[in-house]
Each structure stands twice: as C-alpha cells, then as structure tokens.
Length: 442
Image 1 (cartoon, one colour):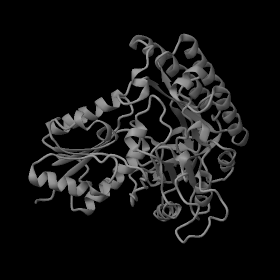
Image 2 (cartoon, one colour):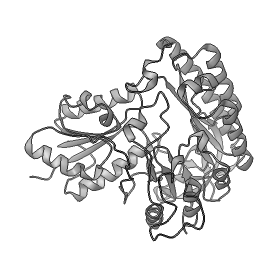
Image 3 (cartoon, helix red, strand yellow):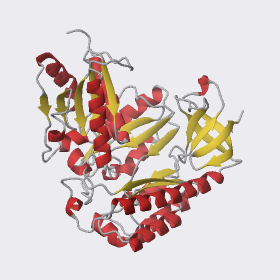
Image 4 (cartoon, helix red, strand yellow):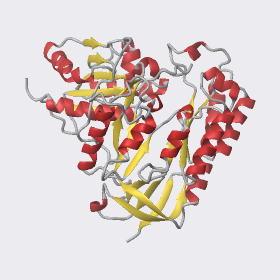
C-alpha cells in the first residue's frame, strides 16, 4: 500500500488533545504520513459527546472530511456511546471507542485495505485498568500529562462516565517517568489532566512498582503533586479541572509549592442547592464557597475558573438568581457557560420541567455578561504589575506573541520568535475581559 496521508481533528477537552497526540505518534510509528495539511487519504476524528452541540460539530467534521475525498476513522467519546449515529455517515470506514487506542493504526490499515467498514467499540468491563498511552512530543507549549481516566460520580446530566468508563489511575512511577522526560525535552509547564483527576489513586495499591510502600503517603492527587514538584527543572505544574469535593486541605496545601500554578478550575454548575441536588452534585453552595475561601487564604491571587449550566430541568428564576449570586461571591476569573443539553442515556434526559430555549438563551447571556465583568475586574488588578508568562508557539492574529500567566490569564506582547516556549516576565498595562496587554521586562 502506498504511504497513506493522515490528518487529525480533535473535539472536546484537554484529555482528548492528549489522546490525539498519542494517536499521531502511533500512526507515525505504523508508517502513516502526517503532513499537517491536506489533502488527506484518511482523517481521524477524535470526538466529544458532552453536549448535543459538540456531537453535531463532530458529525459536521466527518461530512466535511468525506467531501474532501478522505476516508474517516471515528474514535472517542461520541462513538463510544452512539456508534449507530455515526456508522452510516459518508466516508466512515472505521468506528472505535475510547479503550484500546494503541490498536487504531492497525484497524485503519485493515479498513483501508478491505474496503469494509470496521466497527470496534468495546464496552467497559469490571476491573478495567489504566491503559498506557505515553506522549513523546506534546503538540502544545504547555504539555498535558494524563494521570487518570474515567469517572465514578454519574451526575444526572453527564454522559462522560458512560463514555470514559470507571475511574482508572495511571501508576505513579509511569507519571514521574513521562514528566521527567518532558522536562528534559524543555517543556516548562506540565498540566495534569484526566477525566476526574480528584479520584486518582482510589483504584491503586499503596505500593510502587517495586512493592515498597510509598513512604506512608496516601496514593492520591496530592501525593502525585508532591512527587512531581521534586523533579529538577520543572518550572510550572498546573492542576486541571477538579470537582469541588476533591479540594481537600492536603490539596490546598499543594498550592504553596512554588512550582504549582495558582489556578484552579472548579465546575460549580449551579448556585442553587435544590438544582445541585437534582444534578447529583456532591456539595452544596455553602461548602463550595467555603472551599473558595480556603483556597484564597493560601493563594490570594489565585485564578478561579468555573463551568456553569443554565436551564437545567426545573430550574426556576429564583434558582437562576441564586447562581448569579454565587458567581458574584466566588469572584471567578473566568466562566464557561453551557445551556443544559439533554444527553440520551443519562438520568436527566427524562426529567420534567424543561426550560424553553429562549429562556436558556437569556440566562446564558446574563451569566456570560457577568463572567466578562468579573474577568475584567480580575485582570485590572494586575495592571502595573510584573507577571510571569509562558510564551506560546502561535502568535495572535495581530502578530503579537501570546502567553499564559500562572493564574491563567492570557497575555499579549511584542517580541521575537526566540521567546517562544520560554518563561518570561512581562508588565501589564491594559486589561480587557479576555486578558492583558503587556510589555516584556528586560
């Protein structure tokens, strides 16, 4: 077979980006050509199913690839839970799910050679273990490091536990090995990622690969952070999205380590205890705000971002006003706002009390506006201050370099290409809801 030109399209979370980076190297190792630009013979679409809109975007990308003349391999969360919605789309020659990603290159080769559509979506079974998919060369300046996969919480609205399966933790030795390799290769920031990283270690033995006890430590997320901060040369360690009930005193203490970035993403989802209960969330408003207070006592300048869902079935105007109130009290630095999206197979799919599309749109716009107001307030506090920015590889549309601070604020500034990938000090002089205009400090 002639060398097959392959392209990749990724939807969804940081975990999907990590998985795509693994797939790129797996296909390369199998002899496929990945030129970066089309035309392609085969496009791998790594899908997301978290909302109906994300699923629709995946289907659109599949059709677009087929119109270009490419064959399509569909993988990821959407195909794991809804393969029947995908197998008859034009161009699709293979459908796989989330597990067993190391076999995708061989599946693609089989489908291309036989001309028959391959459907290989394996359901999860009890006793699932973490499957190693180490990434040699992350595609972004900030290197994602997968430490865990799956979720055991089963919030009533969420399809992710069905798509990603039960929580599986990566062995600690393997995490440390990949992190050390990334530091040697020059990566300045590592971002811990997974489906629900707060569950890390609950499925593992409290021993390392040699059978020795881990110095009496619990094998949990704080233990991972402590071990990683001991790696020479690691400048920045970022903890990605956490469930609020995972923010323990031990984890809050980790924010004191100089390598740990002062930023947390805490999906609050609602500011109404009644709605949180219907969602199956494992905290109430008072607990959430107490967590915010604990974190800010340790890291006063911390950036706190959050997810918010509006229009959950049965959400009243009073519930919505409570959400706005909690957002104001928490003073988030950034918000991600979602309209409730009923996902087949989840408990909330059949809940009564549907909120109209028009009302969801109104509530969404109100939360977005409040979020921009709070972001601007947070950014204005940094004007005149010197902040540390990791310079990204891609320039902004206006040609400026761009970077990210430790508390996850976007920065833009003038500079030469040799600054890309470096950690530099910049001084902020203008704020917007999106970030800061800065000048490098020489």
